[in-house]
Length: 112
Image (tube, rainbow, N blue to C red; front, side, top):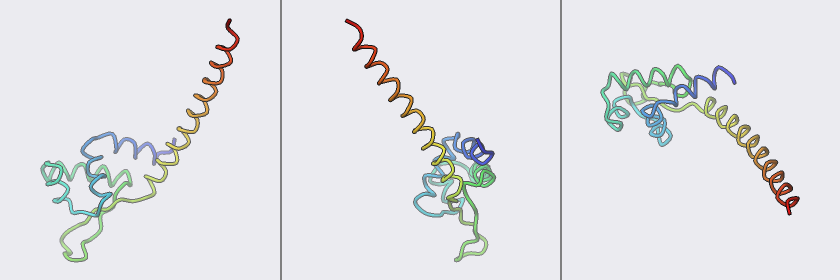
């Protein structure tokens, strides 16, 4: 597993950060908007945003309307890597379960 994937999974382990990601999936938002929508203090939201930025899941850009405001948006790369890893894991377990099912059916047919 890559370091990027490890950081992505660690960042997504927290329900508040997953909530922020869910909101950012819809549209970029300022920290204050995220804090209000998730009912947390600005300081607490800032801590969560720091973790999400350090994991590479989000990035902050200057607002085109207000140079003092920073707008946060999702970055696709970490989520693409996570999606690929999940697809590989699902394919592995799908094959394992199919083999187990075939074995169970062969075993069942052999018994009188």
